[in-house]
Length: 169
Image 1 (cartoon, rainbow, N blue to C red):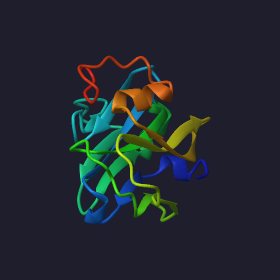
Image 2: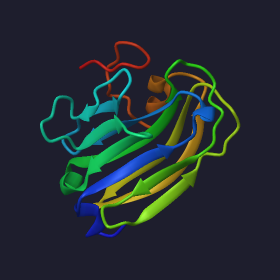
Image 3: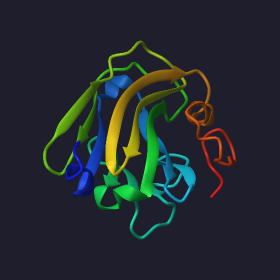
Image 4: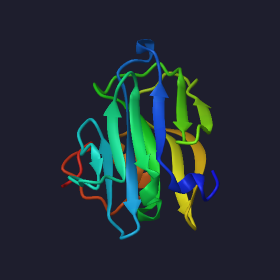
């Protein structure tokens, strides 16, 4: 996306998947420009980033599908993030469907989620802020361990954890 698109509206990351996939949930590990790092998800973490913010940079919610909303007006506050998928129950996911990224201007990027069935956590994509523009990269890397293991593998090692899914507030 160009510099103008990186600063207008909302970037939506949505996991468009049928119930045949399983109880897929998505979340993101993020690092803000001030160095603060944590995760955002509807499950086991705060649904806003930063936690409790009245004007969140990232919001996790679900309508028809799981989604993350990034406020592009605050794009300079976000250094990087990785979006991951996991089973809420800890079971196996029968991957399928599409991860869809949409900008307010209607630009759309689709990442097919056709992967072998797996348990654990899959890092789906990464987003880096490079001089005010977001660079998106498909990752599609599966980790047999926990959310904590997966995000630490991507350098989010400053997050303190209560357990393998829940960061310290």
